Length: 392
Image 1: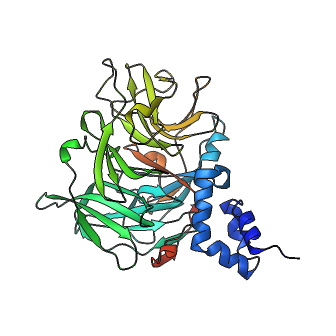
Image 2 (image 1 turned 180 degrees about the vertical axis):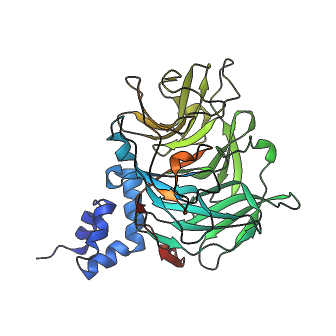
């Protein structure tokens, strides 16, 4: 006797993504269910917000150097289960064209990759699900280059949006634009942000941190004078709120790093020139809800020039995965004050020059994403091709 369809669906919603993909071949009804937009959204919501064991969080990264056109991918589990002497291996994404794609954000298993061409100076983007390999058709090109940008999901319209502040290289004029990933969509100009609120823009804070919680669908950047600049993707308006108060002995030359830990906005900065302080905002937008995690002494993770420790992920037992100022992976056990520093990442090469990622010493950008079944086609967005990461 077969089970009712609603029971089958409830069971499959509790199966990890990596195990669901082969189950599409069991029968036609299972393939239809697992491939449906509703099932993909329900599974992503459950795995990210309710039961994180259903998805394996992974990290995508690339070197901020225009000769490195690949995107490396590795699982967070591999870092937590690794030993000190074993480098973390990666798989490598390479786009079929010669154009350069860089990641600018992730949401619900989708990575947003931006193609910034030099001649002419234009921008376009695609969505890519590394787990299923599905991609979207590129957005229309728009003139200029991104000074600030961000990618996230608007729950109100049930659409993914790409925001950017574009600068024209000839006139040097700036404008704020949004692209909604939807059929027959185009770039829209929106209200410009007050540039006096933006802090110093570099590779560390140009990409907004997306907070996807029950009361927030926002992109966030570090602003001037100790504030967070926020863009609400629903009503497309800006706001700001204060960062935790700094100590007078802090070295203010060291950058401030925003991140998202346990679906909450987090910030890290140097504390009294001797520690790293990581703060988590328990209630989004409420300044009084900033809560500091245990300090991480400098002797465990040494500072490097004016760059800050960047938190990426925290486990249930309070082990923090972060990127050091010298762009190495580190695990910090916040309970027992123990740090495990990994060797430089090695793995996939890019282009035909056989450059290892570890040879890109300028900077590396890292993005945490969760495996999901979400596809651009679920939003009636034309798919371009299926591209899966290849073993390095």
